[in-house]
Image (cartoon, rainbow, N blue to C red; front, top):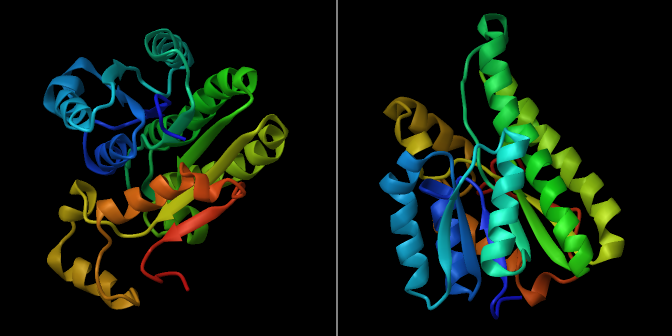
Length: 249
């Protein structure tokens, strides 16, 4: 892929999404950077777009709440009009509202599942319609080790990320005949703003459980996503790739 092909990366104004967007730009893809709000565009998205353009590709921010189907529809239409095609999608947008199950509010459950789970449905449904007409495309969904193995205090997050795996495998079976590859990655503990706020003693405790004895780096996750959009992965679909330093082995 590459060569004037376009990839949408949701939740790409900062963190892992920004790293993925910039790596794919380096690989030669035009990048549609999804941001939740105009404020996210100003405080991150514009900078990511600028960084992407330094690789000689087109990059632009598009505002949409991925949990809202109509906003996703508008964004997909705008990206198609702006770039001419949609050749890839990275469903990266996600939030957390952690808490033990017995104390978790309905609002906390709904908020997380609406973004992390329903957002993947919205974007995959809409983008796959474009890809089916093109008879080609690739989709990478960002799940988590929490979706593979569960995680205490993350009932909503783990459920949403497990659901993403189910959607990945089903979409791969349904869309494969149209030339569309669908895969998921399941990162473990990665050095992001989300893990930076953890107490130091908890960070050290987690490191002891990881075979490589360190947290992963965003660029290591982005490298796997890059592979899934490269010609080398043309026969890979329906897979869940753990990027966790052998945490769950």
